[in-house]
Image (tube, rainbow, N blue to C red; front, side, top):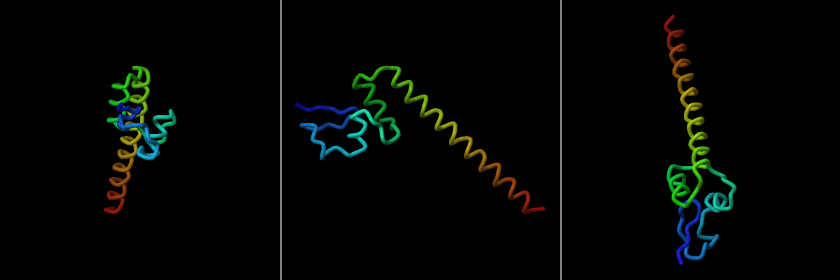
Length: 87
């Protein structure tokens, strides 16, 4: 029978050698890598609760906001440096 892990990786007998360590960790309940959109969809399809999915989305949103702030700070820094060089 074909079994599916939490991340949607199919294995014939859940052979630990054929599943990458990061996926094995996620299947065992210890997420070692950030969730990907594919893993979120697979978890939802596997019956993950809406609260778990909402928590994953909340973390993704907070990381995206942090990255946007860092990029905006770099833009401002580069702009300030270019203005200072012209003086």
